[in-house]
Structure formats: C-alpha cells, structure tokens
Length: 190
Image (cartoon, rainbow, N blue to C red; front, side, top):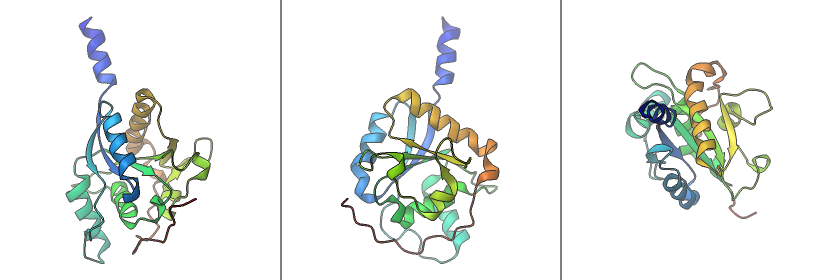
C-alpha cells in the first residue's frame, strides 16, 4: 500500500509555474491558479503593468525578469486571451523563460487558450509566441498550445511535457525575434 501511495505522489509532482497573461484576463488567471492549485505551484501571476525594467539592454532586462519574477519556476504557462499577443511584458516573460544561462535555467513553456477566445484556431499569437508555440499535428515547436483544461490530469500531463521539453526540444527554441518595445494596440471586443 505504501509503495502505491509513493508512486502516486511521485506521479503527481507539482512543478513551480509562472503564470503570464494580459492584464484584462486577470480574472481568468486567478481562477486558473485557484482551480488547479493541486496541480502546480503558482510562483507569480504575471508582472504588473508598471515599467518593469527601465533599460534598453536586452541581457539586463532578461536577467532582471528571471531574477525578480521567474526565479525558481520551471514552467511558464501563458494564458492566451484575445489581446495577450499585444502585451510587451508577456513577450519579455516568454523571452526570459526561454533563456538558459549559468545562474537562471530555461523554463518549459505552455500556451493555454482561454475560453474567451474560443478555439485554438482563433487565438492570435505574437511573433515570439508563433515562433515557439505550435498546435499538435503541425510542425514541432518548443511549446504546445492547448485549449483551457477541463481536468487536472490533462493539465498535469501538459505541464510535465513542457518541463521535459527543456531538455528534449530545446533545439527548437527560436529567440531570433526582437523584444517588443511597446504594447501593440488591441481591441478587446469581437
């Protein structure tokens, strides 16, 4: 009996996840973190819209994001709403998550399409998201896009896959896209 319980606990390891989202999707982000708190440990819910780093030095910006926000998280979950693609902080969080340096290791990456968007086919992606996140059945990418989970088992598998991708799909990371310098305009209405 103890062996079965130990195996179950090992199978249900909770990864430390950073949640990235557009500020208008805060309600979804809070609900997601609460609803699935038994699946992962939420490190931070996104970075505020205050000026994060007042610098044009890309390496400095990425280091500060990693040290101040991502810290010891191992997977970054991007909640994709209608305007997530337009937010520079999301772009910066993804870019920092994909970096691998001696002090701050790369994170796995996972895209979850919020119900407000509808299907995966309807989601709009930024250049960095498009370069690194793909739909199953298409050309392999570092990260996969998923619909909003309807159960903990699916989400746990997706997080584990993103965690393992740090070693198994790192060759697919595309950091050739310049950091967004400003937010893009996005209308929230349909």
